[in-house]
Length: 186
Image (cartoon, rainbow, N blue to C red; front, side):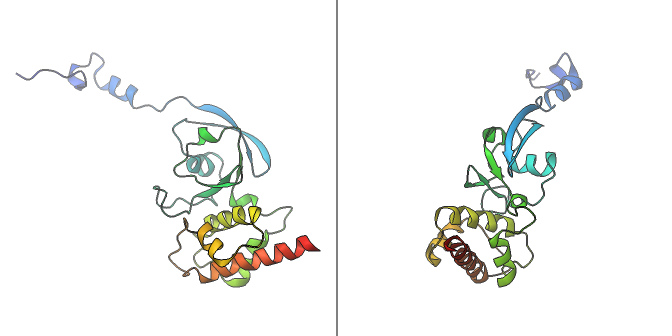
């Protein structure tokens, strides 16, 4: 006769009901963020990624759900001005932080220069990867307003595009940098 394991449902005094009790999600927590310039409070399960909280709990679907392994960059957002893969980041880790998504790039109804440049250069094909590219490029242009092509390529290295090639994306970032630099000189 085999010995009963404490994990054997038949050995449990509560049987199947005890099994389902173990399967319930942990209680939600309430966290505060500064999201796209606005102070927000959000209740979510502590095991949720930032990507899941943004899309499922806050309805911000611009951040894309790609590979879930940190390889494609489609889920890139800015946390404290730095590009972060939201599929690998627990939302709880970002409590109290400034988070910027693609929805926050445009200000006062005006598109960000990167968004204009992507349109001008035809840098977006299907558009799935575009939010990640825009935010990675925005982080670069915050610290370097005149990046070389090599610096642009390095900043965008964590973002994958299956449609465009990358030439038009790099051209768009360079165009946006040029326009932003010119407007800051004026």
